[in-house]
Image 1: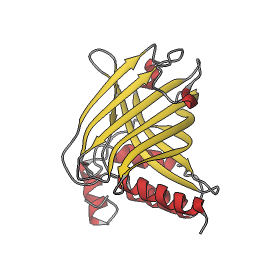
Image 2: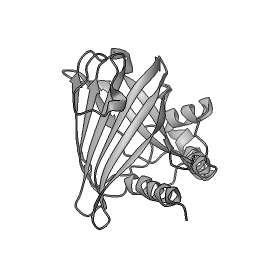
Image 3: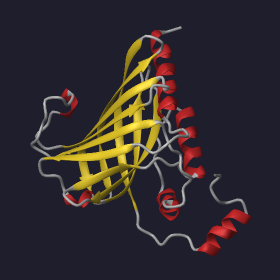
Image 4: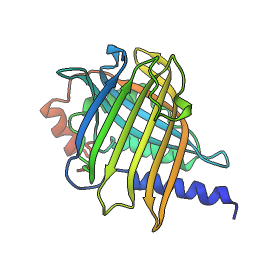
Length: 234
């Protein structure tokens, strides 16, 4: 079997291991370096289009909430399950070896359920984010992020000793930005024990879609969704 097939399978397993599972909430913090645009504030669906060897594509999704904190912007990685319909599309896209491109309907459905999505806590012990403004390039960032005109977003996750994956760092380099859309490249490096320590690197493109602000579902709407089986499974 070609080596790239083994690596692609390993990458798919890694993405599954990074998915949230049941445990307590982690400690989370954000550092800001340089001049970071204030219009990042909002809710975002982030889709990583992992480009695996052999031309395979395996999408992975995260939810960001960027808000104005007491001192500077703060990023929160929401540890919840995606709406079932969107999750089904994500799995189907990966099985078909194609990127996930959410529709306006997907984003609206996500917005309506944002505060009601089932918690999917994780045994991440700590999450540290960095928002690095254009023109600032700390030496610890990968060379893919080396550009004077790009915004860079970094997420470092530290997992419990019981997890195969111990640490994970994702670096998102924003190369295109609009009020409701971010696009660029990302590099993710995870350290795993399998059983010997191993470093696994994933690369690809990413797109972040602003989740619109819409009124939450009413109590009656939630009740009807539950009665007719349209609500998210807990």
